[in-house]
Image 1 (cartoon, rainbow, N blue to C red):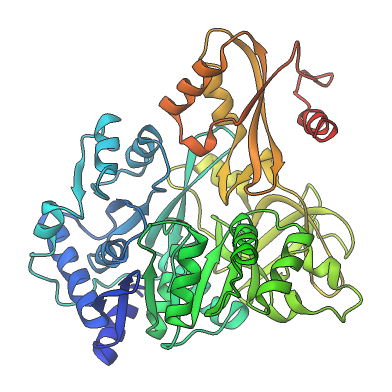
Image 2 (cartoon, rainbow, N blue to C red):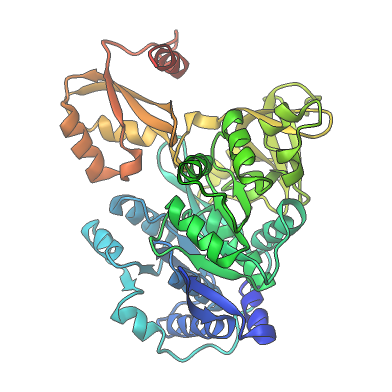
Length: 502
């Protein structure tokens, strides 16, 4: 089934229900939301887009994002949401690798793509191009799609630094949406979902279930994360749900306490995407109350591996409450989760091993990458690369994150891609990038450098090649990098050096 059908059904049943908001201002009810999506689809079809083709979205958070997304699905195409924070060169690689037919972009981001050499049709959805799209004849109904058909091509970086396209099917989107309602939180037409985190990632993946129930979709006027804006909108609307990275939760807590705000109107904050330190979530619960739910997922099983319920987050009576709060909860209903040895043999409770997942929320594979698919999917199991331990009651605790990934402000940074950029400088002989704990962002990027390259030149090189959030915040000079007998850099030793000098 085409997941876009959920919008068509909601429009038919309650077309006058408020749907899309920019701040406090309503810009569409469900009837006009559906009509605009149908016009986007009609325009795409007129441009020769066929079912299964890929259409990219390189846009900041705004109501037009959802119109473009559902319009792509109405046409039977697959969406390729690209993080608006990426450098134009990084976005260009995704467009090329995915075989995208055309791109819907926000004002300004179209320029970044052209400067990166993108020759595809780039549609500035906020300008005259967007007006022409919304003047097209609408399709009469969403194109029928099979459950296994591609709906969303999500690009997540790998150890080589090259992004891999995770194939997310209509079945997967339907599965994780229904799992939200069963395992994460209730949702109804009386609720609002607020998009303060990128809609190209977790926040956007929660759009579909809120369309299903007829909730309102609110985009902050800033287009991003501003705690005071969130508090004001929550107070105005009264039943706000949102997705947030742990660093966002920490900043919200600090600013709410400083401003004397209670968080009134925040009904649910789902947090994920990085380590949530125990002291931080305890402080957040003490201030905001029982509004938090944690989930654990990967792009390969989006938002759908485990969940720590609202009750478990606030419970202080269970003898294991601290351990549970420091973990990521229990398996969500559509998946099996187990801890395995290096060969995939299931391990008993209490033993550390690799987290393995299977079920209808797991991807069928990576886009045009059979080698990576074979390495990640084994005997029907998703090998997450994350290490964890599960207790007898099924509560999972992460022990380490895979592939040395750094999570800063809820965004993933893979050291290899930063290292490759820094090594482009002729006066850098060796480099190793690791994460250092940061009070606001969770982690920050730090580069250990063997060489004489000036910091200003390294900053300029990074700004020209990768997104700003991936640029190292510190460069540490060293005569040599610690290595094992096989010549592999010991990043654990580098992290230990950072902790000792903190």
